[in-house]
Image (cartoon, rainbow, N blue to C red):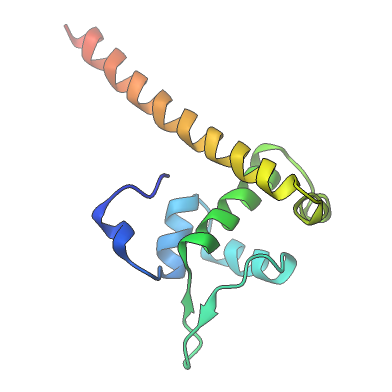
Length: 116
């Protein structure tokens, strides 16, 4: 999902908010934190994770590589380490998210037209 609401003014997001945005379980995000050094949200003194917008972008990239491109964890980790590939992965992830949003909008338009 794109970060385009008033909630975008937030500096930090909870693990639940991020899991919902990405479409994974909270345990998956915790696992990815262990597997990908690029995903390292800050933690409060009592251990509560605080994700930034950059953390969310990184999680989206990981999701794209692992769930959509079907790379293994090791393959996705290697891909993110590659020079310049992180930017490509980020762009690809953004394009996929935008296409999903466009698809949903088109399906809504189709449903409205079918109703007529």
